[in-house]
Image 1 (cartoon, one colour):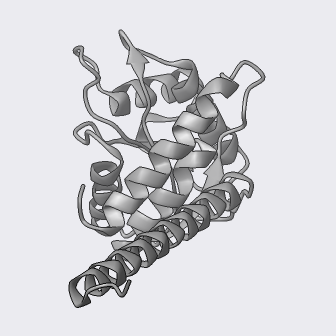
Image 2 (cartoon, one colour):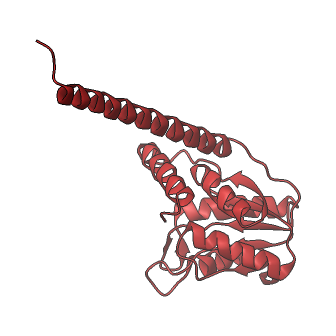
Image 3 (cartoon, helix red, strand yellow):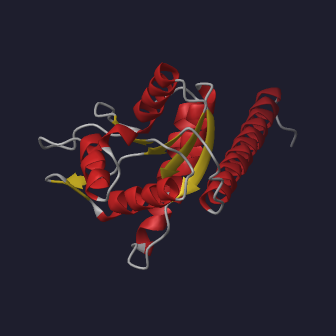
Length: 206
């Protein structure tokens, strides 16, 4: 028995929708894989070279003390500073829910390790990665800084680099070393967060 014209149209429409759905799934999978590969590439290379400043992106602080993750970032920045990579360190991050800010905690920690106060700029207002990157741009232009080394966790660096580059900054990235005590179970969560955050930023959905 021949199918009616209406049935043929519905069948063709369903096939079209199925093909469109599969194409979107394939495109999405391809996009997420590309972002993942970029994150991994930045996480596994250290670009640190002579620059005007080292920028340390903030992480949690506990009652005026840097968390283990933040301390690892600060220690890495300190090593770069001591090796002559740059004469200035910028610590970034606003209040973490108490009277302290990540930027000021970072400054105090570095000063306790021997970095002169005049060699540190503490940014204490930003609340997230994008705000920190924008404030880096403001600080760089106000102080005539042309080239910056960005320090953070490896999985964080691709997104930071992209945001800074979009603001016209010349930045290099340098991941803090992975500690033996780092919780590996959080790695997948971090990657998923960075993939989605970068995607939302590119789509202007942040």
